Length: 382
Image 1 (tube, rainbow, N blue to C red):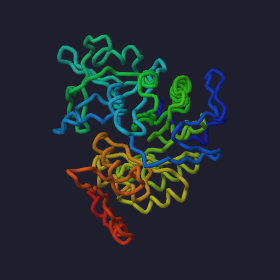
Image 2 (cartoon, helix red, strand yellow):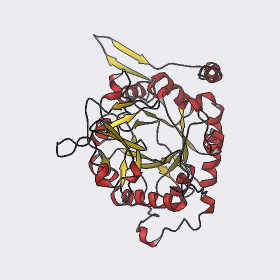
Image 3 (cartoon, rainbow, N blue to C red):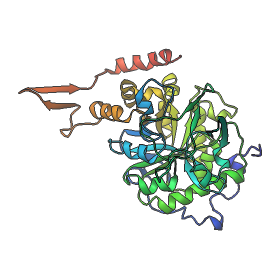
Image 4 (cartoon, one colour):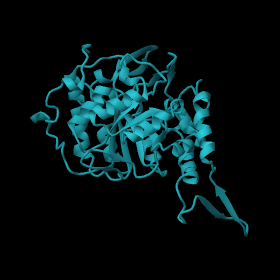
């Protein structure tokens, strides 16, 4: 990949897609469950819960069996998440060398053959090569699938319920149609991409979305700022969010290094919102009001989103939604703590043995909430 930096301001006439793209990019059809007006402001209809890579990411070295229950980023995982009251699933999309959008998180795919471990970049495989890894749809065994941890340890990708790899088109055709898709446009942090490559990849993804999306709610997001800006210019139907670690990690591209920089990216490019690592928000809670003042939506991701109390605190802070791994546990907590009962009250009543059992959510005064918001940044400096 040629290492040539590109900024979206250098790309001419991106509001017009080349003739060979064949995309109805300015369709007036809107995503169900979200609101966009002509100024492209975006509003979540309620506090949103999204399943991370479907029913949760796989952490193969974890002692928690829930993190190895279902193969992440698979049709099985997506439909399992759909059984719970979630709004969206989040998943990672890359494009193969023959221009097919596939769903896979890691930049490289690892396999073992006769004791030798092979590592191949996903975007350098053609579709048929990619689909050969892992269990096959016909029930036969495919090539072995391994995974490298952040520490460099290589593990067999063993989960309780395995499934085959899939394409973006598979997801549109086989996943419950009412479930929204948060499509992360996945790129390698260590590569500076040429503009032609970014446009080709994004057009391949948009082609599938417009051909098969129908009325499904769709959100695009990306850590790659130029990709996020480009996909916003290439279409005006679906909201685009800028993904950021919110300052918890430092990158060469300064646009990725703080919530304040993320706000600038969104305002300059007409993006609809930010998806931040939750620790970045807790370390800098004052940024929430800045984001709201900019009329941007704010979602979060990260391990803390698997803690119901942390999710509830975000709701109190005005955050619009969370991306979680423990889908069942957090949707149940959100139902208990946040969403009102049919009676429109903040507490739910359940019939007991001739008595009424009251289940109430925590109550904070404005002073207590202010104290917590001052305390959390200190506690989160881990």
